[in-house]
Image (cartoon, rainbow, N blue to C red; front, side, top):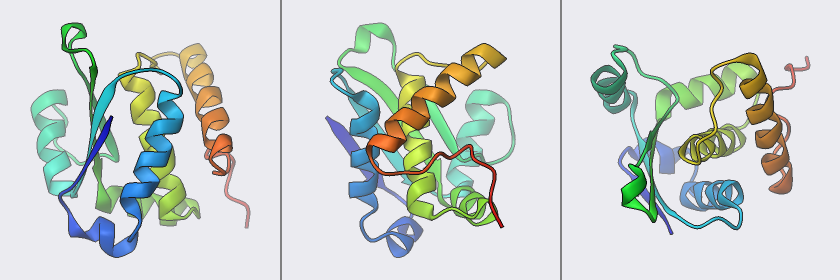
Length: 148
């Protein structure tokens, strides 16, 4: 089960079908695996507060993943996305907000499934998995350089 909570109205203002976009990306990343996740679509201030509290970083970021303890199964964890950071990044990278959101949801779900990018080898492996999942839902490779 994928529970989606929209806390910041900017998400639905920019993407009226935001819940469907998140659902599709999260389901693609989960694949045939089992587990429940919660996705919170919020604003930069809320993400900044969470980033400060849990990561000692006093700034907003695009996505935060909070894996659940192993004994919480079937709950895999929570993902939180900041509208302002995501929208700004999408524009700067020449991507649609829908595609960027899809990428960040897939990225967050993979973290909940235990993937990471602490070193170059892990990063390459995770990026390859993201590309494959995103291609399945019709989202272009997010790591391609912006073409002018």
